[in-house]
Length: 152
Image (cartoon, rainbow, N blue to C red; front, top):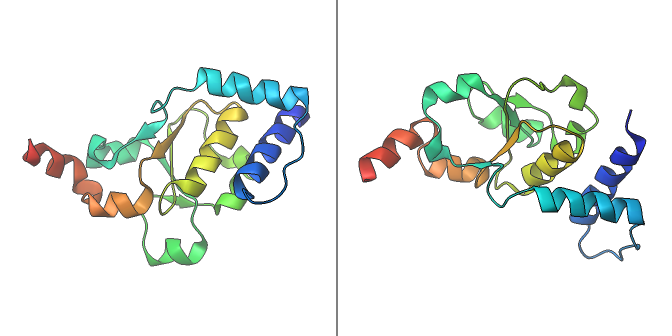
């Protein structure tokens, strides 16, 4: 569909996944696309903290758990859909364009790569759960927003 964009996304994901491997020099089109993305993206525009989400907000989101199936089956955010992070881009046609996608893993590392790849492919509706599932649980899960309100 978008071969150049797909190449850019795959190159970026590979670079992020292999920090100790020798990196090839990126071609000008790849560099230009990445520069354009990072010029456009603000620091926290795509991040949502658990404390910002009331329980009813989760029903309005497409919650995407990108951890492996074993972790998902053990525990996950209620209503989440599981697609392992390595498979999300290949299965992106299944993702909604008309609903906000809240993506998470354990700590946000793999989910962050998924979010960047999807945004580079034109998904403007992707948000990252700050701190991932671990922080979500630590701050109170579905009750994080009400717990945060009691602290103030």
